[in-house]
Image (cartoon, rainbow, N blue to C red; front, side):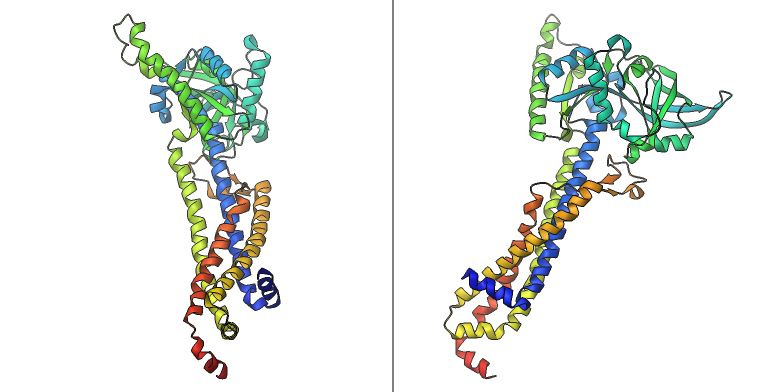
Length: 451
């Protein structure tokens, strides 16, 4: 029976060509847009993880509640011990301390007077090991941060910091303040205790992060310099953890965070006993570390859920649209094949058998169209996965942590997602159009033939 249907499809292209082309186009668009949205989601998660949230982040509880305000007065202290414990207990992640701070960048002229000023957001990371702590582990730590932040790739001019008091400045910030490598700049901020902090730095290089908000107002400094600058010796606002392959694993991250928080929750419950039974000091618990996953920070869980929702809506829309088109195609095909269906009924073929043979025919067309459409969609997706699409023109005023070059991402599901609308739409379209078979009356077939 299947062989008979296949021969009919191949010999009579009028019954298969139009549906085949419709399915190819719909499946290709489904695969492409699914891969594109998957790539955009991955781009957003990767940018957020590398520059802001990490896959996991350790902060004090008080800092976590006001993280958007960069409250370094609520930062972690005794970071060396905590960092060593994290690296020992969770070696599957890369753990690095960071300090984020806000301030004002003042650029003097040759006379020492202010030539330009602008607000900045600073990021202090381990760019190179301090002389007193130079070791293999610290060098690995330094190289890891350079890789995480893509500093080598993004360097436009100048060089990476090699000496104390050197900074990297975002490309758009450098343009707005007319900064060049070698220029002197003064950072004005506040210390961990709330006092004013003023220090001179030298611009080592200009860097393009490829993320509009960062290029517009970010500078990167060495962690040890900023610790001295902000009076944060052995302190850090946050400790970021990233999986070594830089791929976020939500379930594993949630398990690690739950285990870590449970340990410090037990410590928190025992705190009154540590104070001679007189209870904990007010606010003591607020300075205990807490670990949050990427999806628990900044409303990212809602945003990721929206991405998944729209991906499902995308497939549903293509199923609905293609079903309507194929339904109409099926009706037109039934008009063209009106005589054929009548002859088959006159020869004694049951209406039910004829109906299911039409559905079988449509499923074969759907399978072939889905295969070709998937191949075309994957080809376009692979091209954009390698080369990407520069959307910098459309992100000039964006505040999202989204890279300026978007890439599609082909996943195992990309190979199968197109068959859902391809097969389902052909089935629904033919199933609805084929109902007309049951309306034919065998008693009037001879009159129809005579006409």
